[in-house]
Amino acid sequence: MARMAGVSERTLRHYDKIGLLTPAAVDRATGYRWYGVAELSRLERIRALQRLGLPLRRIADLLEAPDTQLRQAVAEILTSIRRDITTLAATAAHAEDHLATPMSVLPQQATVGPRRLRVRHLRLDHPAKLAAVCPAPPATLLTWLRGQPTGGFAAAVTTDRGGTQLILPARAVVRAVVPPPTGVIQAGQDLFGWLDRQRMDVAGPTVEEHLVDADGAQATVLEIPVRSRPATG
Image 1 (cartoon, rainbow, N blue to C red):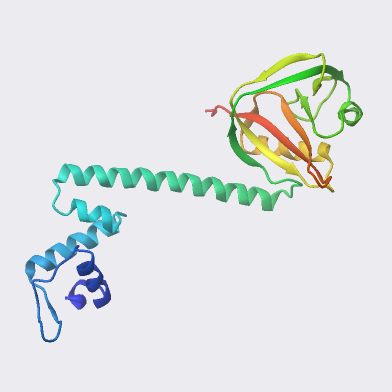
Image 2 (cartoon, rainbow, N blue to C red; image 1 turned 60 degrees about the vertical axis):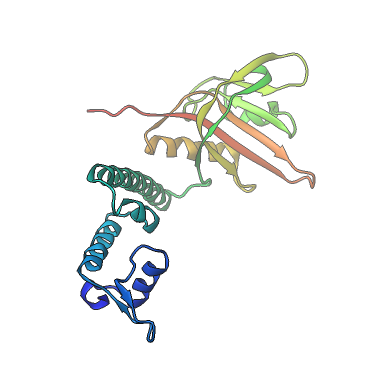
């Protein structure tokens, strides 16, 4: 049976153990399993369903099921496979991009919830002036930029008193932790370049979070809200 079906004897024993394929008879003296035509046909069906990507626990439910139920299960598997292919293709593209274009940060995509901030609005003419207006950590800086600035741009910093309330809605973002040796300006330029290569547009203010832990270690997190760029014909 094992030789005819192209499986191992261990596989047949496992199928028997989980109740997926029971032998027609078992020799009580030797423990030898005997299989008939019905069992061979059942095994072939099991192997065919495995090749379609169905797990054994699902196959056990479908062996005696009507064809409509089987087709539905295969359709679900196909949808899952296509989703995995899309995810893997995107991961491969990001890896290729990282190899082709060295970056100071490693962007991550995420979805974040709404957020309320009290801020003081500013108008600056150069990114180099951001450091002078940003309070000491922990603090949050927002900039309304869509790339390398060519002139003046709007910004805002969080404040404990006064200011105005700013509500950031739930949004899709690209986030990156800026390593200590890397300047925030360089990291921001790298992120904007990465977004352009990934065909994403900036969909709101960039949030620059300056953090400090109990040991005094500091980090900067950049978070850019994004939307996919419409396909062009």
